[in-house]
Image (tube, rainbow, N blue to C red; front, side, top):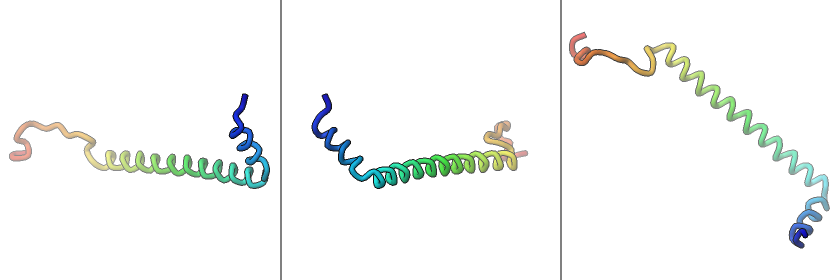
Amino acid sequence: MTSTTTTLAWRNIWRHPRRTLLTIGAMVFADMLLIFMLGLQFGQYRMMIDNTLRAFPGQMKIQAAGYKDEP
């Protein structure tokens, strides 16, 4: 049922098992590093937003019309 191309590809992949395993290992390592770095980056963004909101009044300020002209 499998095509000739699939059979040849599968045979070619496992013709050099060490190379195949090294490639798979490198891809897994790169994926883990990517996930870690994205988590670190989003955590830093969240921390910057929280620190800014803690230091200043907040995301929105409500005041009466004309307050800037005559506080």
